[in-house]
Image (cartoon, rainbow, N blue to C red; front, side, top):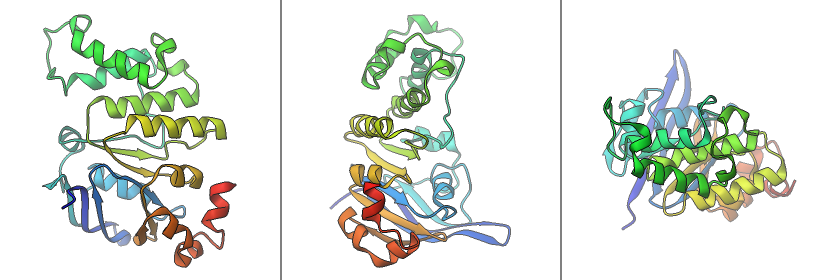
Amino acid sequence: MTTSALKLSGVRKSFGKTEIIRGVDLDIPQGERHAVIGPNGAGKSTLFNLISGRFPVSAGRIELAGRDITGRKPFEINRMGLSRSFQITNIFPRMSVFENIRCATLYPLGYKYSFWHRLDALKDAADRADDIVQRIGLKARNDTMAGLLTYAEQRALEIGITVAGGADVILLDEPTAGMSRSESDAAVELIRRMTEGKTLVMVEHDMSVVFGLADRISVVVYGEVIASDAPARIRENRAVQEAYLGTTLTEDAHG
């Protein structure tokens, strides 16, 4: 029996009288790379905000590895094993690459709100940060202030921060947005490498990225999942093609 890493049951979200998410059911098994796609305004980012606790659900239930996380605060959900990135790069610009990553390693290593530990003396945190900096390809920029990195490097750093806490479920919100094709290709390889053995859920508009990474794809239109299937079947799904205003996913994936 496959264990669910993330399960949504009848999830709804309304802002006032406007219903944005309309009864989403989603079951993502452990270790799956799952993409959520859909037209602009479909509710994809709202769905991410519900899963990560940034928005409270209006109805329904969300489970993380079988544990109910509905209504929990974002930091609680993070500590239960879920980490996310944002559409807008979210880093500490005046801290170095190394310091950004080291910050993310502290809590899972047991360093909570401590005023008597010198950061420079925490060898386990330094070793873990060094390993992640190497894996995200920023070793040469280790001591560079994060705000001075290129856009693609900042996105790589954010992915490193996202995985540094050791979460089993990783949510990436448009991880290749604003990148050139070569940068996007490099980001895909980085994401594949950094999320190996973990469950990945991503929102992404670039179909070449989606079809290059996802084991399964869910399509959200007007707050509802209209299809959830393997990439090959999603390509052929007429309802999905109509949701993209007549542009076939095959064309999108190659252009």
